Image (cartoon, rainbow, N blue to C red):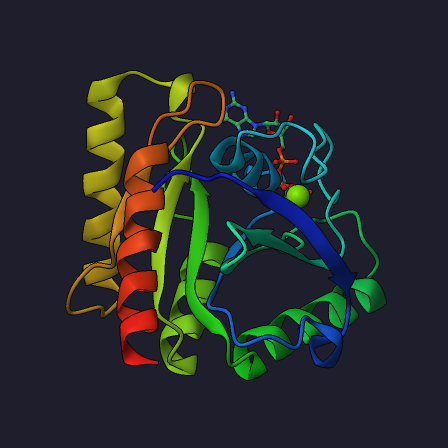
Length: 203
Ligand code: GTP
Ligand code: MG
């Protein structure tokens, strides 16, 4: 799929105020600093669309971007950022879980994990939460430019093994990406396109 237009729509902490449109949407979630906003910019060929930072905690709201005028990409705040206070953490978590549990347009979530590290408890917990909440999801490995191909394959295989160990019967779709060198762009966009085709057909 080619992205011709990508426009910022609105930022929110309230699911009720997210765009009142039936368009399918795809949300990026994961630890702070994992590269959610950078990935949105890479996919849309626009370095300035989503705000990024080398410091964790940059994205603090639910951000909707309208793509090709017929679907939404959603940038979310990261979880697991140690420096925010407990009360901020709680309110963050509330609107994130609210989003995942109540946003009917959410078609698929992508959980981003840093390809360099072995499976972290916080990510596995979130993946299990999505499973329990019945949200379809894929896993997107980020920062693949930072390690070699062999280690990438080894780490992806280890991640699959971990998911099977914690009780998943099959593993979700997985994508290896780099926002630095555009790895995985076609695969991820084609996957979204396939789902969009099914959604639009069913309407
Ligand atoms: P929060 O909004 O704070 O939750 O972070 P985020 O997940 O949106 O991360 P963001 O996209 O802001 O990127 C965090 C840092 O990682 C920035 O310094 C990016 O330049 C860097 N980064 C993101 N993706 C990649 C990548 O694929 N490769 C490399 N080398 N750096 C990356
Ligand atoms: Mg961000």
